[in-house]
Length: 230
Image (cartoon, rainbow, N blue to C red; front, side, top):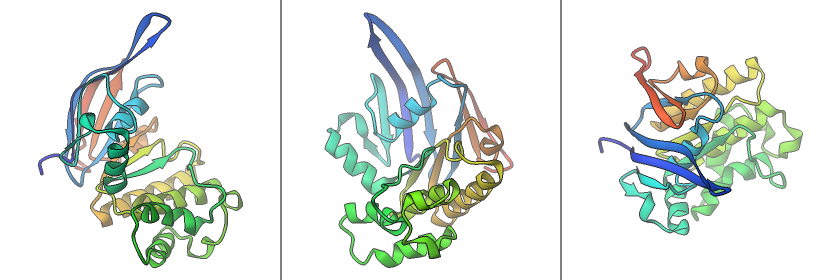
């Protein structure tokens, strides 16, 4: 497969008080399997909206999204959810762990949704990889922000996604913790051969990827291959 994600003439607009608000306009790019990519741009430029469309969390107004060879635009909500469950991992700025589940149980959730058996050993192995083997029985509120994000990293990789979307993954963390989480993210990604798409304000983090797509005013302003990391 040449591209794991193909975006063609993608647009997203909303009707507001009789006016049309254009958030994204005629976005085009393809993402190669196994690559690392950053989407950057100022607040309000449409980065998070673009990420949601790429992952099939939302539906575009115009254009198309093809994820792992599947055209998302033609699918129902349930079918899109199934595609995400089979192909996609997510990391969010605010962790989005389930508060009533332990760290271990949170990591097991994507595997349970897929109906897989004997999932506990895999979840434990992933917690060990992110340095939290001894924290599996703790609930999110008993963990620091950095620990919660490391649990969400383990959860994101638990279903062996083909593509991982990370929305400001270090946005709520201090500099030292951010560095640790970034290192784990890139290490896990490389080991698993996953395709990574990061949305970030952090240009230092973006510079660690192989390609930087800059969004401005809802359009692609720049698309740079970073030769050091490509």
